Length: 203
Image (cartoon, rainbow, N blue to C red; front, side):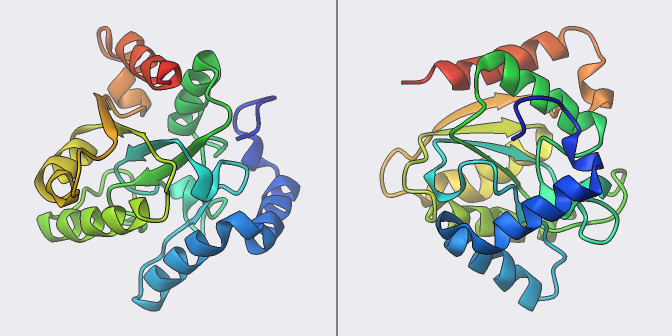
């Protein structure tokens, strides 16, 4: 994540630089294989932000599905809090306020692009994506906290992921999705900010 400003991936040069880093950073090798496997199976899956922690992540934010600004054809091609949309900017602000600049990775309960933001996962897509998220967790040996953002992330985790750990698994914090439609309602923005802050205070 770019700690200096939100929406930094609106800049095509920043996208190019990040893509070069994604292709070469050694700690991202397993994640590149993970994304590549999704592509082999016909899924349009964005890359993980190479300026995040990659396989060294301690905290993982799980949203619903990649938005238009993370799609490989219409946006940056990355799952990132630096994308040029308000959902990303809301997460960027909450992470910044919590001091969670480092040590994080962002993912989705369905890791491939579904279409417009109004398109929601089908039950089959939610099940498939959730199982693939469990595979992703195996690539993150330092992971200790998962922040589930929104109803679909929570449902997928509870139904398909939570029971797949031999031990207790990571600590789970449930909160709202960071989209403006979600947070611009009642006390949700404050609740979201507080949930991210809790992830930032975990030892």
